[in-house]
Image (cartoon, rainbow over all chains, first blue to last red; front, side, top):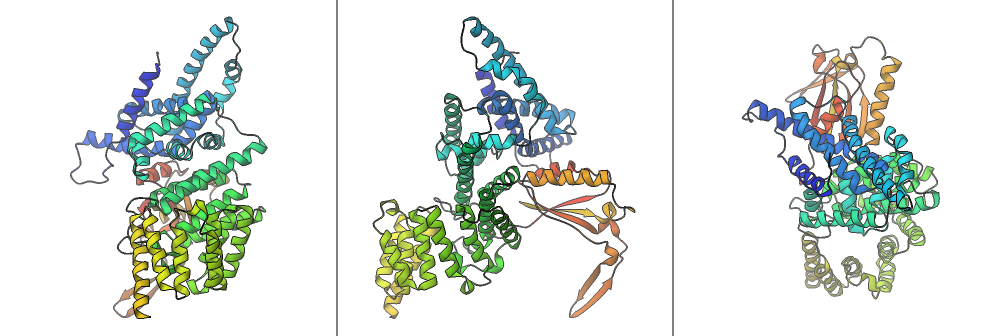
Length: 459
Length: 115
């Protein structure tokens, strides 16, 4: 069978379309005719199976064929086959192995063709890289390794790619999200995401990034990139940088899921547990972070009875796992420990600010940044009085990296107001409001500016 | 979304003897797969309903009733709390469970407002 590149691409698009069928109606009283219902139910099941299996499938195929682009195309081909066969023949008892078996056949096909091509090159005296690969092909296609998805994570989060590309590729190949789902989450056109992913795959191919497990020293660096990508996804959901929504919980869910999967794949890496802990505890506040009109509610003003106790418990457990592994001073574990201080306080008045300030001191040592410094100033202001906090913030005012960062004037405004300098505080809140890209946050900051103005009148 | 998977009592606690080691191993393998996939948030088994109590509310009156209760098929013997992306995903996972009898119910947990 001829598998031209362009034919596969068009099939891939068909696959996207086929899966985009509307949501399955469960028990709809006036549903479509019986046959259609069966088809729609099969589609619902196939979509769910794809979500469950795609990462493992693409990972296993990437290990066989080497590159992520081909692996995804082969996986999509298997999905097309399922969409053609399952609605009429029924969903197989073990759909995962069915998909893998189908895709493997095509992968072997592809490699045999590469092999033939390779022999021709060999006759021409060309250096062979692929033949070595082909020799151990049989081993590679027979086994399915538990840590295949880890290899795929390393690939999708390869430092050669831009952060945007890593995020998009990770959600696509590890999250099993469709282009339009990723696009919707990041408020960009689907074509932008599609381009980003195509370009990312091309970059990986051109740099000959192959599916492999990095060695010990390389691994730490590569793992850091994976953690960074997962936390970027989480943060985009937790505090949407732009748009009219303050939070987009679906992105937090995806990031948490990836983090939990990663924690099972590399259970000995303390920072993975640190990151999971941080995300679990932060996510526990999602129900309290939005007021009745969709407005943001800041940490200290939140109704703590709305915090998700289950996620807090999971977060604290993950933190203690990170600490048991000797990772208490890892940057993520430290941030998780700070989040845990808030989670443990029954009321905001009971917050252990001296401890939080000490944790920020430690964080400023292991992962110094102006943002950490700003947070440290907040903690010190809470622990030792607003004047001490303001001293630190004032030292940051001329930091170029914070020039457009709305939280710097927001924090400064807060401290000034506590010191009774309402007029200066008002100016700072207004400046912060003009800097944020998020509509909800802008309203909040404008309200705080108005409160300061009222202070002035009252005082 | 979160879903609650409830094992109906008829399915689990009616089993007279303790589950065979093979069945336990199969269950553990399945549960492990779920955990590895980041699906399980929480899991638990309950004591048989013969040891349970009910509290009935009628206006200001509260009545406590001791088990056992007649309608065992409707009673819950164990539960899972899963994080999934659709009910279909939950169903696909549940179908893979290594049980050869019993009834399981899948219910979506209501999200907080604004979600």
